[in-house]
Length: 234
Ligand SMILES: C[S@@+](CC[C@H](N)C(=O)[O-])C[C@H]1O[C@@H](n2cnc3c(N)ncnc32)[C@H](O)[C@@H]1O
Image 1 (cartoon, helix red, strand yellow):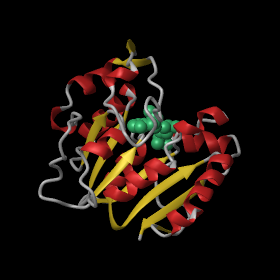
Image 2: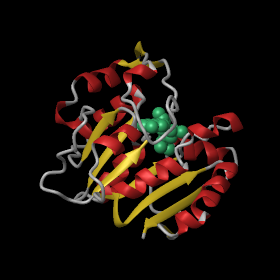
Image 3: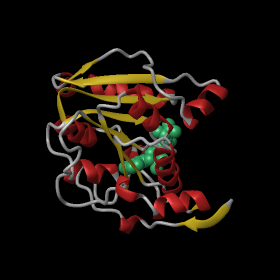
């Protein structure tokens, strides 16, 4: 049942440095939020982490930490966390109803190795993640920003590549999946730049074991092929 509307303005999100001033990879949207999503957001218990200008002190004791950027409704995060109960997953998105969905499923399924953040993942990477500390990053079906004048908002771009690289451990990965051929092409071109091939190697490109998200479902039903990229540091 729809209870209310959430509305965020861009000024609520922390500033970032890896993109040109004023550029964000998302657009805050007015969204309907159900009673149960709102309840989960209002009662996160210890599962929700607030943004801070300090390194994250989680997981404790340290275990391999993975970041899921733009988790949507959290289907992929839940599956990953169940597959790897001894690893930790930090899931970040700006979309409040999805935050509610993921929190309530974490409670329902009694999953304890996930923490959720409702903020700009770029600011999290810049301020809360220690250099060389992440085992892997997932970016599944990032917003394609179709128009050429919006390509500067795409999350897969040089400044973000450099940021991701600095936060991953040697051998750590950035896994990206997209259903938009022109985005896949630009990702391939970007990673093929000589300055990037020195820092990243290309891993197995096949679709790994992962949940089918809402966006992948739509791509399949509309007949678009999905491309998976797996880039490794070093
Ligand atoms: C196209 S959706 C894909 C969602 C999900 N991964 C899936 O496959 O269903 C992209 C998501 O990325 C989120 N997003 C985009 N830029 C972000 C950022 N800088 N920080 C956090 N979330 C972001 C959006 O809010 C949106 O939920």
